[in-house]
Image (cartoon, rainbow, N blue to C red; front, side):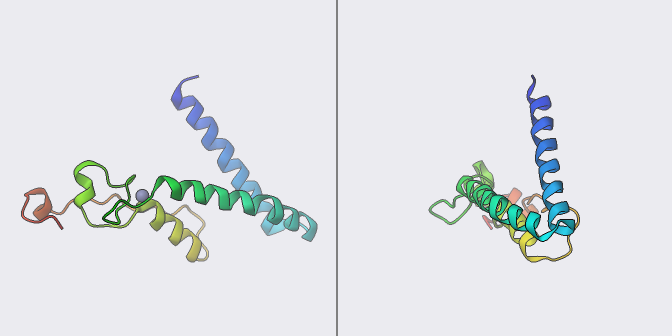
Length: 115
Ligand SMILES: [Zn+2]
């Protein structure tokens, strides 16, 4: 199995599981909703903790995963944290949150400024 096939399978399974959770929470009876809450909310917490473990800040407070190489000198918060925070706090989002990649401004690219 190539990496692309495995990734697609993993992604499809994840999206399917999440869609089922949303469906149960929206349309399920109280017993089903309680079951999902007890079983799957702790799983979701473990997922978020696992993601934040990979995005720890360095000594300068910058994400070691999002800011590698010369990118570590560019300003900007951890993209994963921004996506999670937006998805968590903004109600009514039907589509996944997308945070555009940070590109260095022209001053940074020319070496006039580190910020
Ligand atoms: Zn990050």
